[in-house]
Length: 439
Image 1 (cartoon, rainbow, N blue to C red):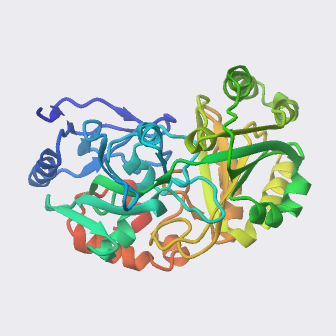
Image 2: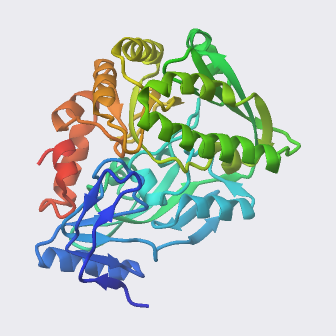
């Protein structure tokens, strides 16, 4: 099978539609050898190289006017090691396929984000995460990875092999090379019981430390213009399995969370004055429910309403102050915010550019419906986040640069020094990396 190269390349767009690029050519390699050859050829032609997954980033992290690598032929599970409880997958494998395949094998990742459309390499490279008291991001579950570097050679990394590359490349934002395979820690399939219930903003912020401490996975959504939140606690369960019934699942997850929500967003975009009233109704639409299922069916949910998002990780102890400032800002601003604010947590990890690097973190994500002006809201929110030494998600909208990151990431210099060594000619550079890592 030959790699496909489209000489006349079209325009590439991300999922949210806020980033476009016109690469000089696109390559879809069918093997690691073809990928290495494509990297060497790009260097010879004086073109930069970027790999792109499903485009779920809101930043231009994958945009290029050079060679765009599409990894959709590099997919599937390469190896399951039941003794050491690891699975090795090709980089272009969508998380959805990985989750379903693992479940069939009686295995699961420990933790995951709330959508699973992304490729494993795209999700980990940008630091995608769920929520967890002890379990971290998807990248924190990586045990090894393979990387094609700027000279076209394959570098194998783990805690034992090339450990300094491993320390950085798990969240590498595409700056160190192109990931070809990832080995994840997995565990025997388990059950989670999810308890979803409404709670007031005042109650959830006052009791946040207890709610965090008492639950393996705690998260909530606050609806701007209201004092209401929707909370979700996921904890391991002995069973029995009690999934959401098909009808109630359709009503809650498809009709209310996608269908009616989409309609409400369209009304709000057309007539912003209706948003506070819609927010009151939306915040009360979802009733309390409890269900028990395998992990990916509890952690993830379909997201069909397109939006633009900014998310910052703040020190966990700064979360409540951050949220109260955000609410006060929205209340006095006169802005009309139709999307809920999502709050999650992660324990400190040891990855150089992970948003949870070296500190217990809480995530605050603000969203706007696609096609609605978001700059004023995001700018005001970002001012609050950065005052708390927030670290933006690498794949979500932000305006920070290398100077800022050098101040909030203790190991920032370690990462940029490694990049100098692995990619001295900046083959994997683009405008976004120039801004966030420096030239």
